[in-house]
Length: 317
Ligand SMILES: Nc1nc2c(c(=O)[nH]1)N[C@H]1C(S)=C(S)[C@@H](COP(=O)(O)O)O[C@H]1N2
Ligand SMILES: [Mo]
Image (tube, rainbow, N blue to C red; front, side, top):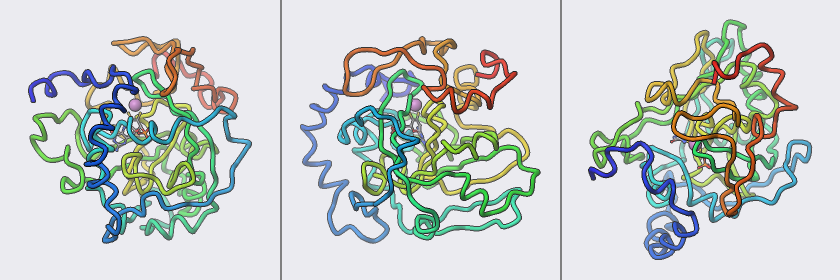
């Protein structure tokens, strides 16, 4: 217990995912029983259910995707604990149906959408994006979703909103780490809150995501709906969202509250700006052993660098 209390990043983060997975295999029987209980229908995810979408080649990397098994067992989702295998081990308590997403703030037509209504409202696209974690690993994932801009347009922003705030579900009965005293560890202020500038939120790359690998989003990856902002460090991509709010002030995010010197509001992937405790110059794709150089804006500079013209990216990290 005490071991888990002290460091924010535990030994698991430097454990090779290969070892990780083999360790997991030992318990996979148990996991299957807990997480993939067939016939679990009252409020349970249609996990693994196929979800069709049209591949948007213009927004897709040509690199091969990370193995599904890795992308669903090596996760950051602190509501389930700080270890990479906690979300896949414990994710079965999250009930992604029924689920609503409240879209409000500075909009003319605030509305609370049922998740299935939301999924039917906009054409689903598949986009292969890499997601670069602040801990210097990355994955390439075929996400399924639609531009967040489409949803925001629909609720008709008034013009007073300058930022978009995302809030994750707060429910200790579904998220074990939200219970006070969970293994003595509680570094984040729940619910998880993240934010983007309005122009970032409405950028065509910003994807409201409901699936991956041709299937409904697994619980551990943020079911039933999360955002994916591929030019920013992974923690900007909030999971299991219940509220999207247009606000006039820069939102106070959970990670900034926890450690503002380490996690800035912008958090654009930037090999030239080190994290206070490690370099951001290179990264490792999960499933590969070599390190590769990290690209500015995670390789999306052509599309997004113009959003930051004149902004000192060292100061506004
Ligand atoms: N609600 C919530 N969203 C979250 C997190 C979290 O702990 N809670 N972790 C973030 C981090 S640090 C990363 S790297 C990505 C990981 O997404 P993935 O597990 O689907 O790869 O989710 C982000 N979204
Ligand atoms: Mo991350």
